[in-house]
Image (cartoon, rainbow, N blue to C red; front, side, top):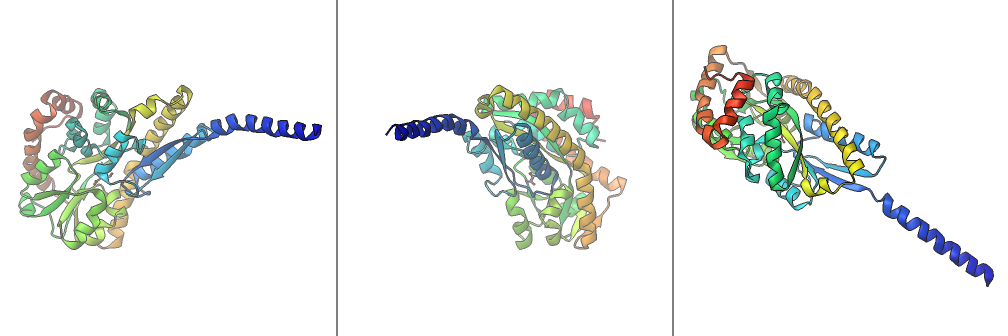
Length: 335
Ligand code: LMR
């Protein structure tokens, strides 16, 4: 009897000890949803963030990365973040207007950045910080900007001059600036979720599209596009965002570690972006599926001149002061 009682209290004691341990051991889960393939700048940076965040928090945080629109498509992922169904996203800067922050569309203005250096003056400068701070009012906290790259234009006919665009149905992201850019060239822009682009190109729902080479290649768009114009006419990149309430509710030490991991993942993303896009372009070329078109300086100048209409049309909508601040940082000049 005595022995039984003793055993009983030992068992109860063990449970009592184990319970708080188990409760403490349950990791904080961060669901990180994105729409691109794993082998892209964003896909690899998300995986890298997972790795270092889990290592540095010693298992107290688990990051579940869901690539390729597995969990949500473009529009749904924004809603899911606000509702708290996922905690982290890295949508393209062209996709923030539905959240109520159209200013991010300044990144879509054609020819606004000539290279990554000019881009970083904005993403790593006061304008970048100002835009991220606007997210707070929407229940979203902005953590970082991740680079992707400069866009090529693809279609089933060669797109060399603005006249070549006439009547072409071209897929765009949900950005009014991109809509203006395509209309300025005489094309008919159509907004489609990223996950729907390959099929839309294959079935002829649209004739062409624009994207950095890393997206073109990993989605196999080049297999259903006869021509790729190496125009570098615009930029596509990301803001990494989290649900504000979730982020504020994290234990302070964990949040500090995650901020450090995000800083390092951002460096990683921005270090690999150009190389990854160069490699993707080389792979598209090697595949022989689409023919490359290089623009002469005069042809490129004609694109720029025509597309400048998008700047004028959105000057007031985005904010003349903000756009002028970007012009001052990047040296944009319509001529
Ligand atoms: C697109 O929809 O074309 C891109 O925003 C996809 C992405 O996330 O790079």
